[in-house]
Image (cartoon, rainbow, N blue to C red; front, side, top):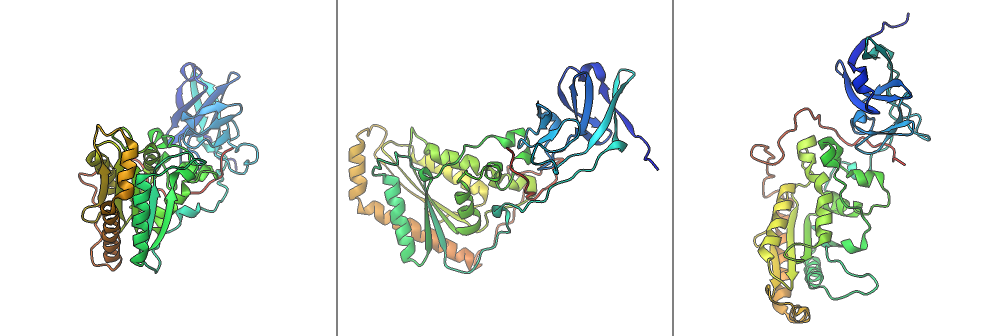
Length: 377
């Protein structure tokens, strides 16, 4: 026996015909309604990937492209783009009657999500046995074929070497050696569009910021991060990195998850010009928002002041300063010591309470874990 029709009025035909694609509501069901060659077509308005609003996307050829992560589905059949036809969203019959567009919800075809293994970064966070683990991240840029002396790199290296003498396991990441895309503002499209792992990481296998995510979320207990001062601010590479770390912080309001627990952060800030406290304060503020904790005196810094434009003298000072090296060793010792205390359970884990914080619960956004999904072409 054929199922009964369920025609729902979704709007004025003349108005809807003025736009090639619209997200409309058929009762409680979201529909991506397209208009081409004088005819309306309807498919689900909810993308298979992370629930993106298909009707707010664009029509490219015969396909509706999701505005969140660019997945494509045929505007009439709901089938995925060539090569991904098994991945499909429901399609509905549509008609015009009395100047109104009607969509038959009872005619829905079946949704099918092609199963995919979750991204490796999406695995459960488990801190295995072993010594304190320290990752040093340099955010200094330079020409690869013509390396130069970097004061912030030099002090970071001293800190990492000292961490080894304390029994810590260490890794070093130089952002300048990684090829990674800048943040593309998925959160600005919708809170749920900024995913963990980062949407770019999931879609682009050549993007190498996965090394930073792996170190911060799954491996390291201590982050030692160094930056030069550039026009009174941290380096451009530092800012590119932290913009992409938005996906870590956004798990708090979107999924109720704190990805960084019992993580210690400390910083090395150097520059030929001043503004040390503002740069360090910005870094402390960001990593505090992620859930990190800090040792006493959580950064070391050096600057010869606003009017000190003679960089060769600044480099000479740092090269010759045993005091700065001793400061770097002390920073590493304080960070490693705090991490060891946290790993021993001597300090309670802070409870994540939303009130008064940035990450209030978002109305209407259901927490969602990693869903995998195909890589768009």
